[in-house]
Amino acid sequence: MAARDGLQAMDRIIGMLPPEATASVDAPLRDDGIWHLDVTLRGIREVVEYHPGRGYGLYSNIAPGYGEMPDIMEADPATAIRRLVEIIASQGPGNAGTAVSP
Image (cartoon, rainbow, N blue to C red; front, side):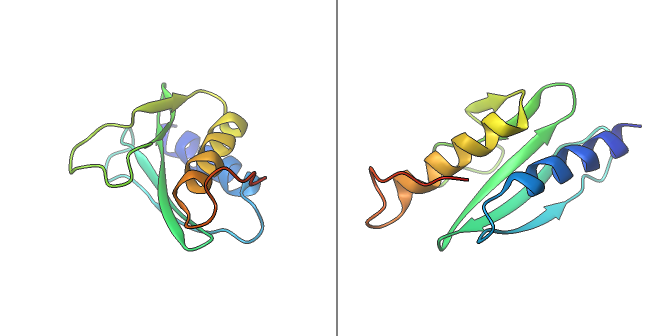
């Protein structure tokens, strides 16, 4: 059941990504593990995690360390995508302060 929920969560996120984004999913080894979605948008790579029972995790730090937990958690996938796009916009050369829409 947890594996199916994780896959559905990743599917929801992928469906909301901007069309120019590319993504790949890494499934956890255990059914109750954390799913990872590697997203590249405008040349910037970010990770969205799905934590069963907690929601979607994002990192505002450009280079999180190994084992570091996300500092942003969102229960709603649409809110997670908006935050992801904001993070990417703030990191891109020449993109700081410009609006990027999903």
